[in-house]
Every structure is written in structure tokens, then in C-alpha cells.
Amino acid sequence: MMKHARSLLSLGLLGGLALAPFAAVAQPAPAAPATAPPAAAAAPTPTWKQGMAPENDVTAKIAPVFQPPLPAAADKLPTARLKLPPGFNIEVYASGIANARSLRIDDNGIVYVSSRTVGKVYAIVEKDGKRVVKTIASGMHMPNGIALHNGTLYIAEVERISKIENVAAHLDDPPKPVVIYSDLPSDEPHGWKFLAVGPDNKLYFNIGAPCNICMPPPTHAQLRRIGLDGTGAEVIAHGTRQVVGMDFHPVSHTLYFSENQRDWLSEDSPQDKLNRLVNPGKDHFGYPFCHGGDMLDPQFGWGHTCDEFVKPVAQVGPHTAPLGLRFYTGKMFPPAYGNAIFMARHGSWNKSQKIGGDVVVVNLNPDGSFKSMEPFITGFIVDNNYIGRPVDMAWMKDGSMLLSDDYNGAVYRITYGPQKP
Image (cartoon, rainbow, N blue to C red; front, side, top):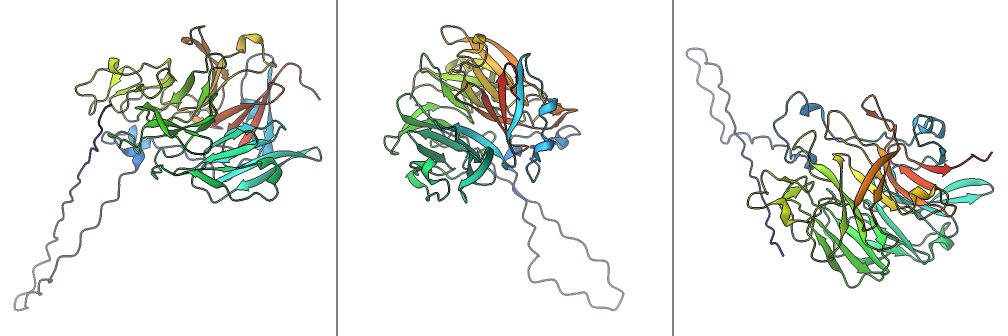
């Protein structure tokens, strides 16, 4: 197992003394101050600027994309501007859900939605022929990851994982979530989590690197799994910078996951990745030494080759920010989509010309290797600006897809075939 050390950068400040003008003849010189005024403290470098080259006309205009302050009204959502393959339809399922992120659906059709920036978890329920959004948890610390198992809702915040048992019975009077696991770092950069229940009835989640590029502590840049009661924690993957989507192959039960690579190396590299975990506990996916499976880091790559690390199943575009992914196991879509991966690419910010902002379909060979990738939903980027940003998807009982959009605070439904009135 590779030992990690922190890489620290010391910054110095140069202070200058202003020269007072010469005093008039015969006037005494002013007394020197007893102590020099303190120098102004330098503002800390934002985490997203770590590893940034000196600013120029292009890089000075590049910064993370911030969502509008309020969710978009239902009649302002961009469904009419989105493009899908022939025969597919998209409609608004729910709106007004600030920063809608992870999605889960229970056996009764109740849809659970997390909100990372607002710190809430919601439930969308049918009532009197209408959909109603209820808040079931609030005041949480970036509760991005949610998972369902046998009626229990699991919620992953930055530094803890908690649960609400029999959650569907408590939508009007939700109890305080019960913490089951808290052995987690509290770093906010890349600290938000994705949460999934595996075929082994264990909870799987990520711990991101606390930086754009650095030598992470041994508690970071990894995937872990725990029992449903929070016991038996294991590190199952090393060298993962930031993972915000994972799912298990319906046949082989192999874990596939998306991974966002570092920023500020180039407009067109490194490539973000789709990975699979073949050797739990042993596999190392390269961070911070190798990015995209084929690009050594200029600082941390010394003495390494990319062949030391697990290669991605597929490269999915530079800075495209792949997030939620799901294998399709429904019956509504054409058979060609069976067991294919649907992946939401949130869209780039570390590029002057934005890419991503779409949903793609990844087809695999029978052995689980990459076969092809094709667009499924496009149109979230117009004139190099976002009109929406897809995050996560989930399957309804009828095989239709729900898709979250954190930029607009909405959930869409995608169906196939003639639309019903």
C-alpha cells in the first residue's frame, strides 16, 4: 500500500514602507512610530484554484458555475429545448426543489431527492392527483448521498451517515436521523458523497480528495463500504479523486463508478473516467499520480508510470464532470438499452468552451469492457451557457427515467412511446 504525505506550499508576503515627504526647514521631523503597521493578510487561495497556472486572458474568465439563487418556475424549465432519440419524450415531473441532486424511488413510487447546497432531503408524493414535495430532513451538512433499503432511508453528509427507518410512514412528522457512522473527515472540498446499497447489502460511498491536486491524507481519495448498521468499515478502492455516481452491473454485480479528474492542466485533458472495481481493497485508480489513465501529473507523477494503476473502462471527455450513473433494468425503453449505463455529465467549468451537460449511454461488451458511448439527452448548453445541469437518475416501476437538474431545481421524467394525454 502506497504511503502518502502532505505537500505543503508556504507563501511569503513582502511589505513595503512608504516614504513621507520632506518636512519644511526648521520643523522637527515627526517621531517614528514605535511599531510598523501590520501587513494585510493574504486571502487564502480558493480550493478550485489550486494547481492553476498564472492567469491570462482565458483562465481569468474561467470559474466554477454557480446555480441561480432560486429554482426555476415550472413554465421556465428547458424541456422543449432538450433533444432525445426518436420515440423518447421528456416532461417536468417536479419543480421548485432547490439544488435537486441524488434520486431514489421506493416500492410505492415515493421519490426521495437530496439537496447538497440547501442541506435538505425531500420526498415527492402523489396527493389528490397532484405531486407534493415534503421536507423530511433539514439543517444537514451537504447531504448529497441518499440510499434506500427495506424502507430505511440512508443519508450521507460530509462527516456522517445516518438513517431514518420506515421513512415512508413519517413523511409528515419525520424523526431526527440516527447516526450510524461518523469516522469521516470534515473537509468540504469534494466532501459531499454518493451513497449506494450493494448486492451484498452494504453501503458504498466515496471520500474525495480535499483539493484540486495534492497528496491526499490516507483517509481521503478512496471508496469505502460499511454494513447497514455502520460497522465493518473497509477501504475498497484507492486513488479516486472525486466520485459522485456508482452502480452495480445487473449480471456480474461488478461496481462501476464515474470519476472527476483534476483541473488546470489543459483545456482538453485530462479525461474524466468511467471505472470498474475488480479487486476490492487492492485497486488503485491513479490519483494524484496519474490522471485519465494516461497522463502523469507534472508534480506528483515523478517516478511513476500510468501502467502502475487501474485503467478506466472508458474516458468520457475532459472536464465533463460525470456524476450519476445507472444500469438500465426496466422494460419501457427499447431492448437495445438493456443493461446499458446511463450517465449524467454535469458539464465542464474548467474549459473556455463548455462540453458535457448531457446524458450519455455507455454500452458494454459481454465481458464488461467498453463498447461504445452515444448521446441520449443533449441541449443543456446553449451559446456556451448552461440552461440546466443533469445530476442523477432513477428508474420508476414502469421503466421510465427520472432525471434531476440541480441548476434549475427540477426533476424530469423520460418515457418511450406514444405520450398519454
